[in-house]
Length: 234
Ligand code: HPA
Image (cartoon, rainbow, N blue to C red):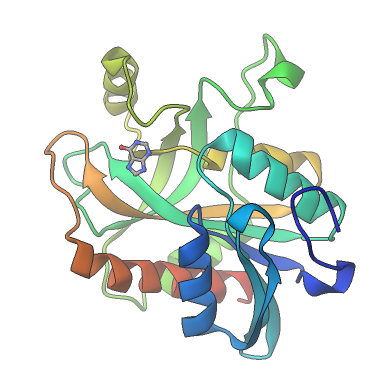
């Protein structure tokens, strides 16, 4: 048991999928895992453990934003022995050729914030995905219908952004999409010698204003979970 995760040590698998939304953790665990059991409900941040093709997997909500994700990922790695951590979430598209419902595999993540800033100070650390997971996810994605992009993303600290100039610079430098968690996940994985990846569905588009209709979210989300699981156990 930790401050934020009310599970016993053996309750958490070495492979953890991390949606921001705890209800998506429930949905994904019920749909994709076998022998699923609830292992955490502290603060309503639901976590489930089960098996996928015989492999133990935990799906734990991370909450929104890097400070929240940082709490869960620190405890998962340091206290529960998680070694492979894959964020499954949504992002806003930032390039013309990135459409809503496309999937982005985040090779790197640029950030202004991150709870790790206090460590790096004047250094600009470059948080990057685990190559083995990224490669396996790209291969897995070939078997799915959805268009997949691999490249850099932006982990912002704000959803309601008052600095459109920052987004403009991201667009100008080829950043594919914006979300709020991956940079801290990649930084923590690097610090603790774990594997991490973010698999993201484009739910809305900053340039076009397009948004994924509610009824399509589930299907897109499902494909993302499958790609994450296939990559984890490739
Ligand atoms: N900004 C930040 N995070 C997001 C967005 C966005 O536009 N869309 C989905 N997650």
